[in-house]
Length: 552
Image (cartoon, rainbow, N blue to C red; front, side, top):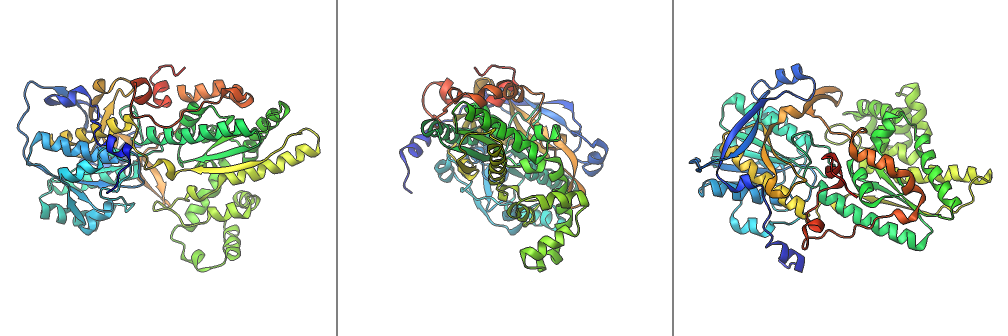
């Protein structure tokens, strides 16, 4: 396999770890926990794994004898930078605890567990993937583990290979599945532990114990480099407005973090739109106001950051999407209609009067995108909705009206962008390389301590890595009940942008000056892997502000 100079150099990077993980450790149990919401419902559904205590690691004078274990690992859901380092940390942790421990990888995600597609991961294989992006060591997938026959197929392969534990590396839905699996295996007393690791570039899997999900740091740095490049180009050519849609369907953490890193002219935050009950026209008007003001100053260019999931946060559109999700869930009649026109009329005839009005007001292309195939959870696939084109079209129409009224005298040339897959498999930043390795090592310790239904946790992340705090959090602690495919089910509660939090308040305080002055752009440049710590090891601005620290 041919490698770039950077790949070769990164292979030699040894991730930094919390000091406690470098010592002999003893497990300490903390306070009992409860779910984020809907406590009685969650407790009833998870009688064997609900209410478990937080887990902490303390230094021990001697390393206890850990029995030999075989562990299986699953990469689940979309890619995120650092996944390979979780596996490397897990492997190294297992081998340190007992050299006879074995690690198996289930191929292609959760389906590998069900279909018994598995391979043993040895040192030579692990070494090839240290500090690399992607999930290609064993592949990933989006198969949901939710039915009893799937759990039983998992038991079969685990018994066959004498696997004692499974580590699921994934986002909120994947870790929800991990907890369901842990509950089932504990109920069956089959001796299979399940541990989760928090992955998602969207940044919406977190609480006071899980400070951030891995991959968020790297992805935001990749996107911010691209945005900075675009802003420098715009500031040079002085003739284009760039509308940039960024990943993050359920929360605007990426858009907010990229705004903090690059200081664009307009940054839309979906949670703010919902809190203020803004309409689509209101959102467009806020963009148009910035365009007009800049045009008055002779600045016919700029950048607009748009969260991928914006359209779902506009109250009227959110109601429309909810009706569409219920209507189109397993709806063979709709599919069999065949033509777009017939499907459009079918939808219009079954929506409420209010939602039908919204549906009819949308450009046909966008309305069509709202009726495309649902994701595995029964939700609209917002990544397929070209929101940047919708906002460009609506802004152009409004600016034409203002020009006719002689209020707007500028030029409006636009370019639309969507930054998504560009960031999911990047070579992980030092932060993510270190964080992921520590998560994997932590998972190994939780397994050796006999724990199940836990998510690996590493905290105190704005401090040097040696001062990070490792442990475990019961996955049920993150749960609430949500409506999926027309019925309420337990899932990990998504962490939305806190409008009272320091990161958003910083944006709110500075957005006016960023809107009106071309001198405020920041050009982050590419991720740096070698050099001074203040350049190479910095966490996100979101995390820094959340910890009460300054970013100026």
